[in-house]
Amino acid sequence: MLGKIENLRIACQRFDERVLPAGEIFSLWRQIGPPWRSLGFVVGREVREGCIVPTVGGGLCQFSGALMELASRLGFKIIERHRHTALPPDVRYIEQRDATLFWNYVDFRFSAPYDVLFEAYLTEKMLTVRVRANTTTIQQRRQPDMQDVEPYRPQKLSDVESSKSPKAAYLLGDPQPEFTSYVKSLQKGDDMIFVPFKAPFEIAGSEKAKAPTLYRVRKSIALRWAVARKKTVAKAHFALVETVANFYAKHLHFSVEHVCVAQTLLPYLWKSGKLHGRSFDVMMYRAPISVIEDELESAVERYPQSRTLQEFRAPEWFADAEREALAAARTVITPHAHIASLFENVVELPWDEELGPEKAYGNEERDLVVFLGPTLARKGCYAVRDAIKAVGAPLTIVGSEPEGPDFWKGLTVSRCDIEALPWQRVRTVIQPALFEYWPRHLLKAHRAGARLLITSGCGIRKDERNGIWHVPFGDANALAEALRKSLEERE
Image 1 (cartoon, rainbow, N blue to C red):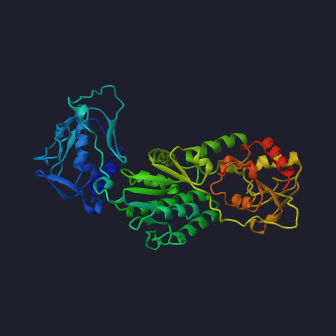
Image 2: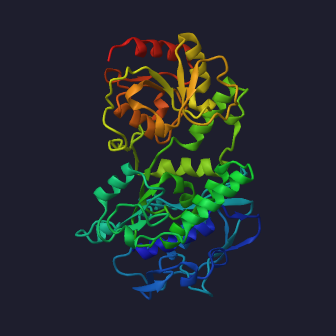
Image 3: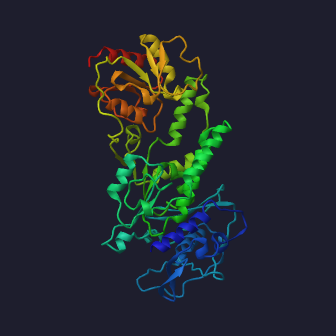
């Protein structure tokens, strides 16, 4: 059964978004190609002379049958169609779905009276084949017994062998402790593990994990080259992630029924069709790209003087593919509270608590207000500047200053590297960022005893009793008020 689903997955990928001009003859074999192992097809179930036999490419009759039903309903001209000579006793015969195939002389062919766009995809439970056309002449021909016909629903391995749970695959991105712990809690001995590079993944069996060759070296060269040419590194990251996703897609075995996939890889794997026909979960570290870009556009309207808000945007197909995949996902897994609030089917993980020092004590007074930076509009630097002016407090700045060397001019500021920051003196950390993917330094600061003035987009839940305040992005007045309260409160 799993081989049949893999063959249908390949057929859908080659058939989806195929345009058939009016009057042109459509050939199914010409579209999906020969069912050879070299083209990715595997052994599936084929009905031959009333018997079910294992054959490479077996199961494609399910696809031709669905297409036969569609073409006959819409009144297309059927040019070539062959019926099965016999079916197994337990298989119900449905006339309008009977269209067998055999490479390379038994084909299914038809033509349409108008231009049509075909769509085909697998979900965890269903095969869907449909057409779109810019015409008002479509007249469906409903078969008398169609209301009694059940749609194709791929059988799950757990239904076939109740003693075994479905085989899973974990497709990981760069190592993050929250996701590593999650995978370790679920994985079984026969699950597949995919990693971009071999270390430092602390997962059982990761030494046998599949990984692209020399990915770390290629990544380092690509990013350094982008910086040297003064290009945004975002494009380089996109190309690198696509390389990893293509490797994973190539080596993902058809026996895998469930996939747990890193968000960075999701659009590429969805577009490849490798997630179709499987259940899958998504390990998310950021909001959907469409949500982020909408927030960035709003920020551009607020701060038109900032060039850093108008940097690289993702391609349109990327956002569309991610949106479609997230809609089809079984579960979203994330430690990020803001991301968790965007979904109903979510597993919220705890942030890793071993990231920073225990509460830093010292004889010195906690007198530092720190902006972790860097000085970017999306990090909230404009609101920070206005709030500091209103409160009149000195500010310690961490990180680079891409908004310009004079951005903090007129304020009492000092600069410090994150490694040299005296945590025992830090009273309040300000980071009213539009979004933070991995708020590691914020978690470290709070663990060391500092109060946090952040936005919900930073991914840490509001907890004023324990020194975590939320302020809206870009609201300097709210930030100034929260800062005054923070400075007035006793230790």
